[in-house]
Amino acid sequence: MPWLTPADLPAMRQWAEFEIVGAALFNALVDQGPVDENGKPRDHLLNHLRLYRQAQLGHEAALGMTPAARMMIKATGRRSDFDLAAAFAVGESSETA
Image (cartoon, rainbow, N blue to C red; front, side, top):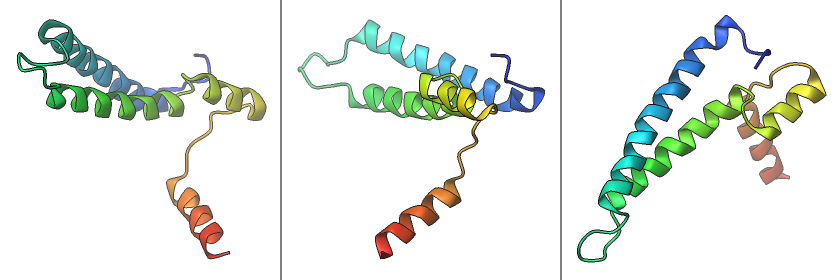
């Protein structure tokens, strides 16, 4: 990923931490099974794994690790930073129109 710079190190480290914790949660699901002995889903593990993977996906996009993020880099020549405030402003202006 040649577009990454030393300034990306904190986000890269966080992505790696999500990978470690997510793998541990996944391994627990594999070991214990997605349902308990009564046939009920192990919601605590399933929900935590889902939340970790969603958060990790945000880091992947910000770091250009997804196909869509890489297409943005190719189109603009730089990594695209997501501006949450601007996204809300666009959402609010479209709702009032």
